[in-house]
Length: 109
Length: 116
Picture (tube, rainbow over the protein chains, first blue to last red):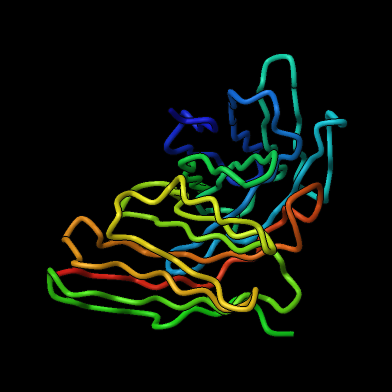
């Protein structure tokens, strides 16, 4: 029973365009949401987060949107750069953190 | 300052042997997590320690897996009688706490376990 779902295992986006990564969750008690980025052979690194009391948080090229009624959040990266190629994990917490299975993002030259 | 460290970085063991994986969290972080990432899979939650509370062991896949956290700092994940399906990268993470921005976890580089 996955509480945090990333339904797209992979995504390819042209360099310079917008990358949109999606995440759905089932537990309405989650009060904090996070995105992590992972390169091969490294541990995940924190990217951006959002509290359940907000619907948008922006940090440079990265913006996270939260739609609580739909239990959906998304990460927008614009413009996409080659170094953004990685696996992106969505995570949510109401005490402990639960991760999705990840989406592999390929930025095409 | 030092981040989360894990040892060993790689471990090859024979099926049936016991292994211990170590995690040194960031000093002052009260929350510590263990995750497992099998080839091509996402992050599978294993166990969570928060301060002096009883650990949340709900993610441990079998009773061959156990973990402890001594003195609220270093943690050891033990796998007894290893099986080939235990082969994975085991990741440890720590965070300041368990609400709001304190959720933000810092991950170690992981231990790659191979069971032959």
